Length: 79
Image (cartoon, rainbow, N blue to C red):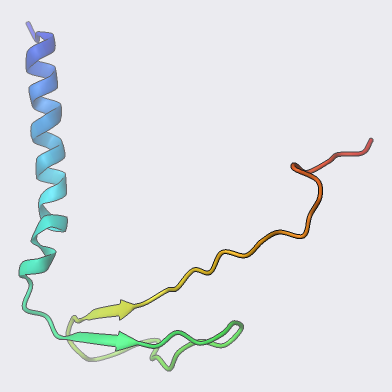
C-alpha cells in the first residue's frame, strides 16, 4: 500500500531528477557567444542550419517601465 509519505517522497525525488540537468548547466564547458539584440522587426545575424557544435547563446534584455497615458484602470467592453 502506498502511503502519503511515500507518494510525497517519490514526487520530491522526481522533481530533483527533473531539475538535475538545469542545475548542471553551469558545469558545461561549452563555448559562449554574446548576441546583441536589435530592434524589431529585424533579427540578429544567424544561420538557420549550422555545422558547428553546441554552444551557449547569451542575450541581454533590458526592460524599461513607462507610465501609461490611459485614464481607464481596466479595459472597457461596450455591448
